[in-house]
Length: 45
Image 1 (spheres, rainbow, N blue to C red):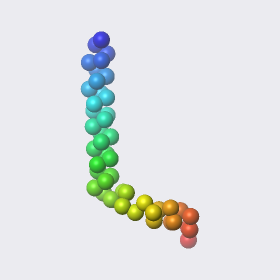
Image 2: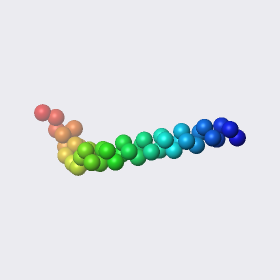
Image 3: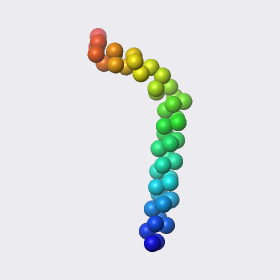
Image 4: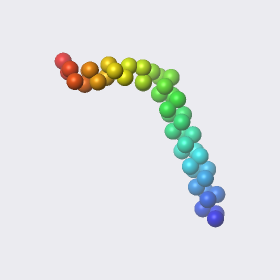
């Protein structure tokens, strides 16, 4: 039972870290040009 007192805050912290990283990537514009990436990968110059 004492293990839960350790694992729950760790899980919440990792979840918050993942959500923060995802929101940062949205604001940084990582998902703006999804279609262009596939064309750049196929038609390498």
